[in-house]
Image (tube, rainbow, N blue to C red):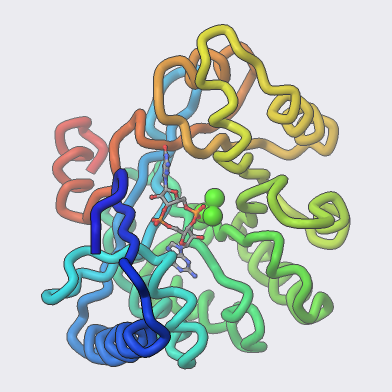
Length: 275
Ligand code: C2E
Ligand code: CA
Ligand code: CA
Ligand code: CA
């Protein structure tokens, strides 16, 4: 494997056989890693653009594999879904995240990503609410992020689960907005509380003085629908400055630091008097 840019690997002459072997290794590693508690929550800061204040964290799963190092969810979530382990994995991560976040200042929210496969489980909402109660974490401080692709699933079931979560105060965000197809129809189908502007659009703001008509259009759509917005992928000061001129927004991205583990978050919050 050769290193290609940040966190990217490609494989020379990937024969079908070696690919399958690698894939089997991953599968075995995931099963074992789950049993050994190698899947851990990392957290990315979410900030109010205007004031610069920290307002919460998005939980991003990481696999700390003793053999492979730290692995991104883009690799292991699809496999966990395929081999039927995503629910178990996600429940463990949630338990950890609720326990972590309960220690944080009451003003801070926790966002978690939910994959379409998880929403196929008719008991998803009930089990989530039960976990919140067990952890003593207030539903009002929880936000779940759904990608557009979720909404091609059984829409009736998904809607009723979303409704019951919202009734308890959980907020629902539409993640990666603009990248899926029929985004607008999804906004009509489900009662969202927030739109997250996909970072592929946000990154158009990188050039000094540049503007993005798409970002502007998504923001005015959000305002028109009375939905608050979060810009993801805020990587530098240029992007932040451009967003500042666009009114009230939340932001997250590498400008504020890489996602970090619970311990690092605790240290950060302690220093800020928010623990
Ligand atoms: P996402 O929800 O869109 O999460 C944002 C991804 O962009 C994260 O990658 C994050 O590390 C990365 N990112 C954040 N800020 C920046 C930035 O400024 N620039 C760039 N280039 N990238 C940035 P990550 O952690 O690898 O997660 C990938 C995806 O995996 C997530 O995309 C989310 O859809 C999914 N995911 C993460 N955790 C979980 C989980 O616990 N359960 C499920 N079902 N999916 C998860
Ligand atoms: Ca997300
Ligand atoms: Ca996203
Ligand atoms: Ca994404």
